[in-house]
Amino acid sequence: MAKYKPFTKLFYPLVAAAIFTSCQGTGQQEQENKARQLTYDLLIQNASVVDGTGSEPYTANILVGADTIALIDKDKAFVYKALKTIDATGMVVTPGFIDTHAHGDPLKEPEFKNFLAMGVTTISLGQDGFSHNNKDMSAWMDSVDAARPGVNIAMFAGHNSLRVLSGAMYEKQPAEEYMKAMEDLVTDAMDAGCYGLTTGLEYNPGYYATSEELNRLAKVVGSKNGLVMSHMRNEDDSLVEASIRELLAQGQYCPVHVSHIKVVYGKGRERAKQVLQVLDSARQSGTKVTADFYPYTASFTGIAILFPDWAKSPHDYKEVLRTRKEELRTYLRNRVMQRNGPEATLIGSGRYTGKNLEQIAKELNKPFEDVLVDNIGPYGASGAYFIMNEELQEGLLLDPYVMIGSDGSPSMHHPRGYGSFAKIIETYVNGKKVLTLQEAVRKMTGLPAETIGLQQRGLLKPGYKADILIFNPSEVRENATYEKPDQLASGFRYVLIGGKPAKEEETYATERLGKVLRKNRE
Image (cartoon, rainbow, N blue to C red; front, side, top):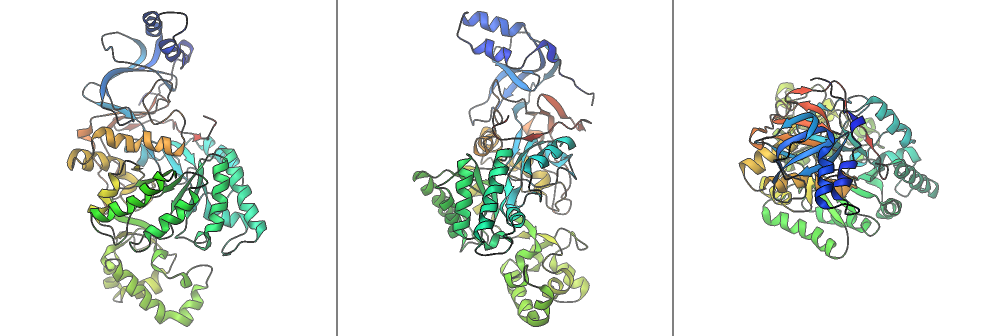
């Protein structure tokens, strides 16, 4: 791909928008004529515009100056001057997708090609309660900018990481000095440009946090106009509603958001309605609550999810093996059978990657619970777990307050990191036809931008940043599978970040175009 340099000397990005919309001094026709005399950096012709609001598509020309959308003109007959022109005839033009829940290390794997291939131009990191281990969030953000990530990054502070950095660690009732340290860390992170706080209450050490602790931190987030996103305490069918209510209690202080909404072991559309009703009731009482969703029926996380609390840190695993091994074997056998059996756990890291527990047990000629106890242990692997019901999950997807997040990364052995956004279009728009294209695009652009608080992103609108996709929906393919999860999505012909092509057909720009987005500083 040829390197594209915007000719900014001829254009200041907001000039055309100001001329076109101003009602002072001159008539409407004269304003339009002035805007039309400018030379733009990019013209996207004959676009079928799906603008991210959920509104019906319309045909227009889109003009970009520097990194900003300058003008959207439905008068297609007018000929504009531009340094680069893309003919979008027969294609749709949408905002770049925003991944509400993503993973990856932008210092170690900054390309993020997996996201670009499926049309994602902005990702949210710091999820499930885990961010980096640097107390200075601003310095970390500067280092990420210096690494030039392939996509834009909206950062959240992780509660589990804050517990470690503050010294609270595994304390159920942290001393006041540790609580104050966590509050100060949240304050500093928000001041540095974070969009809020994430919790991962199914993981250690966040598991030990009480509602009192979480509410105190939510107050700090609310004072900075931020958002609390939560991997809730328990997503099992019998406990998911109680977990939601724990999160909703924090909603009295700030907006709250359910990460990767699901109901483990639950079944049917009616159960989805019951869970969504809990959220709807909270909204009617004034709580701002949303959720994100990935379109797969297998979750992915550390194998520790199978182990009992008493076999995980801070407990000594060697001591557990010495004193409670038979109890642990029984627990694991029951736990795995409850989760659809050993064939439903697919190992995604370590030496057994790509094999399920049943296969490994046969190869090693031992019970699967002994594989877990002796060969893997609570921290020896991650895995995909086939534990969700398609009909129920689809019911959650269709809710207007539920958006899309992949919960994926470049290195995760799960297709969601490479296919989620493409699958929404291929399966739910083109295939099952349960979403219109404009509804799906809203769930991937305007809704997440509004929820997170991203300024001037998520919509195709004059004055907004030119993070733009150009594609034919019928060509979009997921490609990633559980057997080959790292296959790039296809069909997104142009992926623009700040008006520059990060991807054009199947060629990726040599210059990475992303940056860290800082709340209230864009």
